[in-house]
Length: 106
Image 1 (cartoon, rainbow, N blue to C red):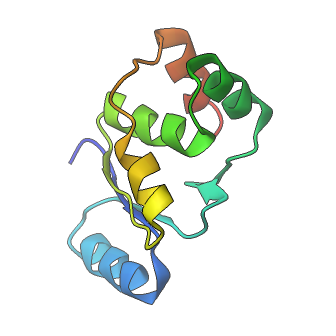
Image 2: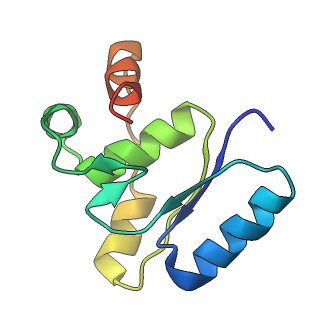
């Protein structure tokens, strides 16, 4: 598989899923906390700058980066405003420069 599978809001069930996928030779990234996605802090100055440029949250920019770079992402939240935010990521396109800058963060 070319790209990793990303499991958002992992908890114990996500860790179990990642373990099963890894055992099958599928690469995974487990995302555990809302303030950190794949090891990238959502308050990173580069992400904040890019998010401000597009008038989006840093979480939205990170999720959109995943989509533009072909990473399968499954966002999870129980909070209605975060569910809506996670879905509101299809009205902008990151430039190649922004994709590269985000790509160097992890």
